[in-house]
Image (cartoon, helix red, strand yellow):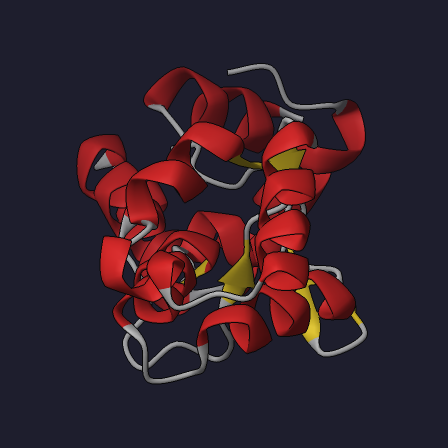
Length: 155
């Protein structure tokens, strides 16, 4: 994994500030440390919003009865979303707009929500930033590995 110098410094600071992570490091237990950092937080302090949900993923989230109930203008919006290639759900208008197409209780809206947000791992929270009400991270979906932790702690 290739983190920038600033990200390596942030990782080191986060490990040093977390008593559990630091105890793993000091005991030379890098595997448990990496597992700890890559574990989801429960309860999560916030949810992470994906910035690159693909049109293919949206297509697979569609539930036919929900789509068949859309009006012509709503179908046009759904088609435009498909043409975008990928969709940034951290943008409030995007999340709210697609949610309104199907209604919050619909199967499709629930499927899309499952694609768009999830609890962060400890590693992801190190780099998470708020964009309005949404939290995003440049390491979304990535896991830290032993060599990266060793590199960070050596700096």
